[in-house]
Image 1 (cartoon, helix red, strand yellow):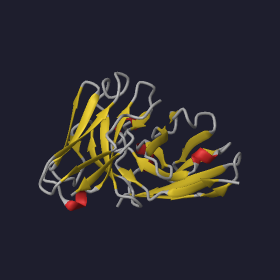
Image 2 (cartoon, chains in turn green, orange):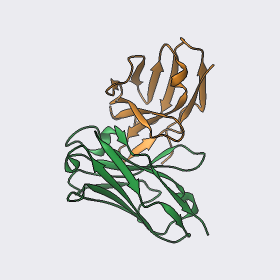
Image 3 (spheres, helix red, strand yellow):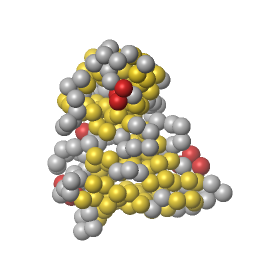
Image 4 (cartoon, one colour):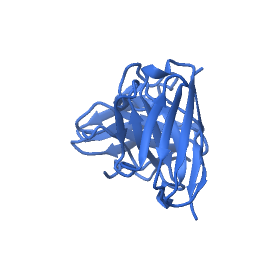
Length: 123
Length: 110
């Protein structure tokens, strides 16, 4: 069974940093593009970042470019999101999600999602 | 980049059909066949319903279908059921190599 399990969320002060992790199982992790998507309280879904299966190509929403870094470790089957210079409007549930097509890019969307991890940015 | 435009809410009675529209631009929906739709029940993980405009995800009922015309994509749900009540989001690949979601539509089954 394909599973994604996020961790690393918590309470952080404005300007602080946090690293989210997403442990993947049930599929050949390095063959699939992966994404991070967030949902702020009372708001809709927002795509945050994506990464190719090899890790060689990364993509970011304008709202996080220059502050967030996506990466992956194929030896640990884990996806990461390093979040720096955090702001109050980064508070959200963060989901990791898998691309549906093996060897495909992020363009195809997301077929399997984790349950999410909550980030609260507040003093 | 602004979110794709969806109606905030739609409603229908059991057994009826409804359509949720998703309007973008020639740089996203109008340019690519990479439009997907997600069903989201609050507190749960979103679920892929439709990908590449009109392909149903594995296990999704045939009551769900998708289409696209120009810069607007649509999700059609026929034979509405109580369990269909949820938030629905469209998502499109864009010319800047990013993904863009719609603002979401709350479906109420009367």
